[in-house]
Structure formats: structure tokens, C-alpha cells
Length: 169
Image 1: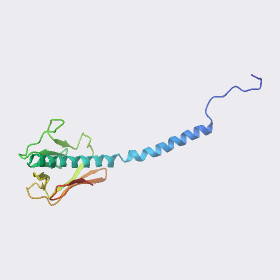
Image 2: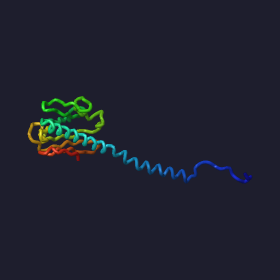
Image 3: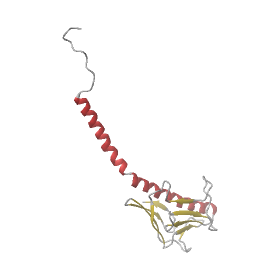
Image 4: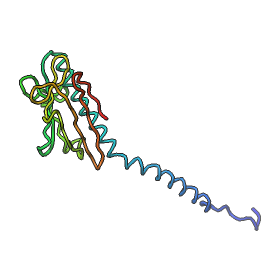
């Protein structure tokens, strides 16, 4: 090594540091909108779950040729809904083997609110052996809307009259 040669210097240049900071800032900006969309995503999942449970009750009615119902309770704290057999008893959940009762607090649905249940002015819908929906008084369903809310967002589950077709929108 000559007398005038410098020993190698280790470290980062200013340009390398600036590039790393810029890349990290871009990654952070992309992550923030994803975090902000957790509410609508959770609400959509809850609406699809309610629709799936309504469809399950309808499928049971068609499979067994007997009435099955879903009863919503928006005044209870916490809010919940249950699937009932033709005698009005809560059915057993096929997986957990406990009562088929879905609670809106302390679960994956925490923060989601049953804002409105309008099943022709009742809070119960039943399905007959053909899958046709009926309101809580036993009359054919004319209007079936379950509206869920969370953090200012809203989503509806619709039950079509006559056919009993169920969709989340």
C-alpha cells in the first residue's frame, strides 16, 4: 500500500440513505389506505355471513320439507339472531354443536350493528319446504331487508319475496 492511498471507508452515502427513505415512504403510503378499509371489509364480511345463515335456514327448510326461521333481536344488548326449527326451538350449530345463536359483540362481528330489520314490520323470517319466505306473522314476505352498519358505513341483506333468494348488497 502506498503512503498516499486511503484506507477503504465503510458506510452509506447520502444518496443511498435518501433512496431508502423514499422507498419506505412509498410503502407506508400504500399501506395506510389498506388499514383504513378494515371497517367496510368487516361490514361486508358480516353481511355475507348473515346472508349465508339465512340461506342455511332456507336450505334446511327445503331439505327437510319443514319450516325453519331466523329470529333477529335488535333491542337486546348485545344484538343477536338465532336459527329456529319448526317448533320454535334454537337449532344446534352443525360445527360447534351449541345453540345456533350469532352474537354481534365480543366476536368477529364486534362493532357491527343490526341497524334495521324490516321483515314486513317484524324481526322474524321463516322459510317453508319450497324455500318461500314468510314474515313473523306467517304471511308471505313482501319486504325483507336487514341493514347492518359500522363506522358510518352501511350494507343490506335482501330477501326476495316469493323465491326467497338472498343477497348482500
